[in-house]
Length: 254
Image 1 (cartoon, rainbow, N blue to C red):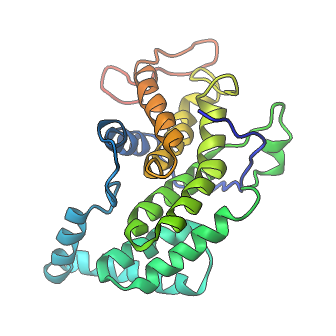
Image 2 (cartoon, rainbow, N blue to C red):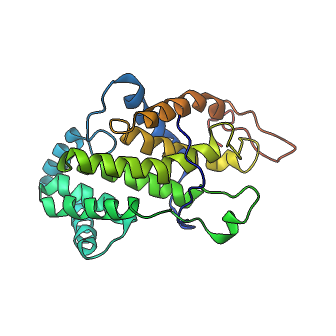
């Protein structure tokens, strides 16, 4: 894997990332990356099958209709904003309505984001020795960017796909996987701070890598590397000295 150095990001202390949900999410979809030569989009969350099912359900299920009304409201509000962390709403709105204005707005936000020089970290994390470039804030950006890129992929031309994918690789995949997984840059481990954050930070970096592997082959290689390391997290036996529990107890919970 080609290494990119000194890349940081914009942290987000309120990232809603649950370890169990993320692990299941990533473990389920990473197989797309390693089992096929070319990834078909969309195939992460907003698959064609799920979109067609949702279109039918919003017409017959009151709860689904209410949920969809909330989603499209957020999407419409974000047509006037530039919030990367809401672009998944725009991607879903595009797929549900086929209205290209949602894809165009999501594309503009992604392009604007990757044309920035860095995704800055918080001052406190960057002052650590070594500096932490990838925390839950970056993981959340990786997750949202992966879902959005996958969702609007077919509304992008080849040049747009390449520019966005290359930028997401440098700004998201590189810091996430270099800090949490890849040698010789890795600074976290399962028996340190990394036990609870590992699947979020490394996992979402891998999810993003999976989404852009058609345009950035080295991203696919990085995603496969993470996939091969997942059994180590599953089988982590705990560490009394570091006060870390094993990943799963006899009942299957943390």
